[in-house]
Length: 580
Image 1: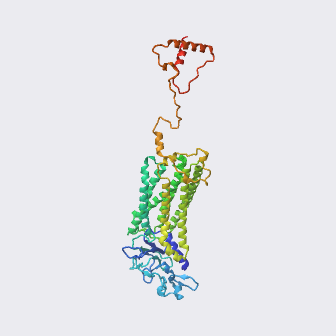
Image 2 (image 1 turned 135 degrees about the vertical axis):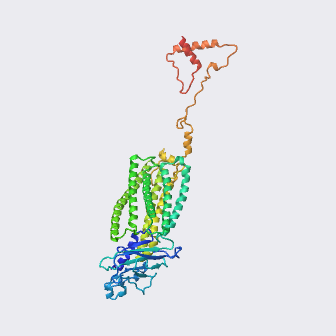
Image 3 (image 1 turned 120 degrees about the vertical axis):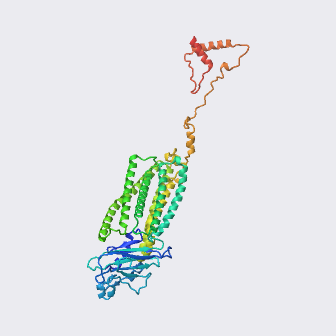
C-alpha cells in the first residue's frame, strides 16, 4: 500500500499535471485519485449548491460473493487527509483495509477492501466513503458546504488476482457553472482584459488615422497586430464563457475545435511578437527603412518555424490533457500507453521549441545591443533614446515574470504542503495563465507607444542627425542627458521645401547685378539745343584713336561677372577702329 507521504504527493502532482477541460473527469485503475478546488455557494455565488457525483461506467471483475461490483470510493477535503488510514506496526500508513490489517485488528472484516476513516477525528469537511455495487450513479452525492480542495480516490479489489480495471466518471459541479474553480477567475479577468485591449486600440487608432498618409511599414504592422490581439483576447474570453455554460459530456466537437483554434492563435501571437521584436532590434523602420532581403527572409523562416512548433505543441498538449472517455475507450491500459506515447512526442517537440525560443531571444538582445552601439557612434540621440526605452521595457518584463515565479514558489514552499495547496489552487491558473498575459499586454503597449505615429516619426526614420560641430557632439554615453534632446523635425519644414520646385533652398543667393546704364556716357547728358555736339565727338574720337595706337599695352578690362551691358562710348570706339 502507499505510505502517507507519497500518497499526499501523488495526489497533488497528479492533479496539477492534468489539466481538465471540464469539471467531469474519469478515474481508472491506473489513475484512481483526483483533486480539484471547489467554491461554496456563499464564497462564489450561483444558482445551485455545489456537489460531487459519481457515475460508474464499467468494471471488469465482480465480487464472487455478491456477483456485483465492489468499487470503494472516498471523498474528502485535503486538509483532512490525516483522518484517513491507519499506521501499521512497521510505521507505514495504510489507507485500504485488507486481510493483513484485519488480522492485526487495525480494521474490521466488514471494511474489507474499503478506505479506512478515523470517525473520531475532527475534520474541516465531512469525509464520505461508500461502495458502488451497480453501474450508474448509485444515488451517491457529496454536498460541498465549504470552499476547499476536494479529493476523490477509488479502488476495485483484485478478485481474480490481477488488476481489476474500471471507468468511473466524477462530476465536480460548482455553483457558478462547469468551469473548474481554479479557472473561474479567468472568466472575469479575461473579460476585463478584452475591454482594456479594445479601449487602448481605439485610442491608438486615432493617431494612426491622423497620420495614415505618413505611416511607416513598422507602424502598420503594429496597428494590424493590435487589432489581432484584441480579437484574440475576446475569443479567449468567449471560450471560457462557452465552457462554463456547457452541460454536455464529453465536450462537443465544436468546443474542442474552438479550443484548438484558440491555442493556434496564441501560438501565432507569440511567434509574431518575437518576429516584431527581432526586426525592431535589427533597426527595421527606424534606423533602416528596409532590411536586406536575405536577412528579412531568415527572420521570417526562424519565426515561422517557431510558430509551427508552437502549434504542434499546443495541439499535443490539448490532446494529452483530455480526460474525457470516448465510446471506443474499452482498454484503459491501452489508453494509458497512448498517453505516455503522446507525452514523449510532446516532449520531443517541446525541447526544440524551447531551444529555438532561447535562440531568438538571444538574437534579439544581441541585435538590440549592436543597433544601440551603432546609434551611439553616429550620434543619433533621438533614435538611441527610443531603443534604450525598448531595452528597459524588455528587462522589466523579465523581472515581472520572475516576480510571478517567485510568488508562486513562496506560496508552495513557505509552509507545509497541505497549507500551500490550500492557497495555491485558487491562484494557480491566474499566475500560470493570466499573469503572463498581463505582462505581455504591458510590453506590447510600451512598444506601441514608443513607435507610435507622430508628426515627426517619418522624418525621424529618414534622418541621420549627425552633429555639425565639435561642440554639438556627444562626449560619451554616461555623461550625456538624452532627455534634453528632442526631435526638431516638422512636416511643415518639408512642405516649405517642396513649395517651390524651381528654387534650390541650399543655393547661395546671386550677387546684385549692376545697372547697364553708364553714368559717364554722353548719351545720358542733356543735349544742348544750340549745339549738335559733333565737334566734341570728333575731338574725342581722335584722342582715343591716338591713345590706342601709342599704347601697345592697352587692354580693355573685363567687366565683373553678372554684368550684361558695356559702356556705349567704348563700344563706339571699337566699331570705328574696325572701320579704319
